[in-house]
Length: 337
Length: 226
Image (tube, rainbow over all chains, first blue to last red):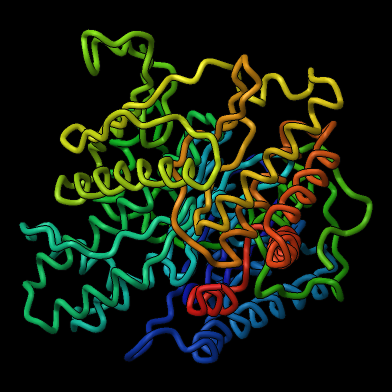
């Protein structure tokens, strides 16, 4: 069975073709880069719309399959930016109607976990999912993917991006901060906010910018910002590992490519006797393959959606998603309203 | 002897004589916040020190508020250790469901009273589970592990505290969870008075919204300190 997955929750338009054996036949990513400032949702959606046709075509060509050979379409139904979600959902519905093949909407956060499990062989990990749009610690418990900890304000990737932008570093901000941080020597104290299992990054961001305006060395600030926010992430992940007694930690999301974060997580895992698993970089970031694969999992375990039901859910929570491929149970009602 | 390894600390059972004074007898519990290799020292040290001191203060204040907690013998800010009395007894988690009905109700009421006393003093425990309630052979109920506790008089923090207790009951003691929560709440109300009603309402609301609140709403909650 072949599925074409469409990802479009934020600045990445991703198209992937995946087989039910878990083989990724192709995946194509087109990334919207704003001229200045952050993502403008409508501009990003316009970008996606303009790229969709050629990206789908390219993905099919790379996979060596024709449109009619596909058995299923899936799309990122949420959570994400409304205009982007709607654009991609519209494309998915059109493809489904055109070919007469079914489609399913997929939860973006769950898809990050599932592609990670597929590619790393992780069975039942605690997942640290960190990107510009999301920051969650996720683990499977009692039939659902539960959120053990999450940000109370901005996502960690957003914290790093905004800092980079405000101090004039070129986009993408995360890698620029990482690069400079390597040359940082002095740790400047920044607010470290862990509330139980939850995190907050607006405090360290504001303070780092304040110190910058006071003339602190940029290298030291990058270093301190990374050390502070990553330590908080690792601490909450460690709490989830201790609580659930799981032996694997999976890292996902765009920030997963940060080497310092990997190093810190690895250190924590070593001390606890857990193993750290990180998918290849291109599948940590948003991509179409993860949507295709999760769509296959859902469809093959009985999740069905009529075209008119295939709408987006901007605030779709991770723990609202039914995961019959892990519980073995399927509700008779469609799981997506 | 290592008895528990949590996320941030290790609990050791040691002899009083060895740890504190050669003339002492019996056992002490040493809670050691271990250094975290993944954190830079400049961050690791003040964090561990702050938390060690905070926990000692919370344990002490809880006792003053009328909640039985293990006495703290020593706060060691060099090694980030708390030395506490070793409470003989078993966790409520182990014994709750084997109890008679009358005894269970006595315990529920006590938990409700404890919680109200903490909250009235501006303390939230942050990790209310039956593993953190110890029953001594003499029938005394001890509340332990204030590692996630804080001074926070907000309605939200109190509601979450209560909600966490309910969740813990549901996941570990589903057979008695409903009766337990009902009794705990009514004792909580009796002890707390009118304000307690608001907390119960907030706890219901927290349960409804699940694990996740829309970002704007959360931001507003944080800003208002509610």
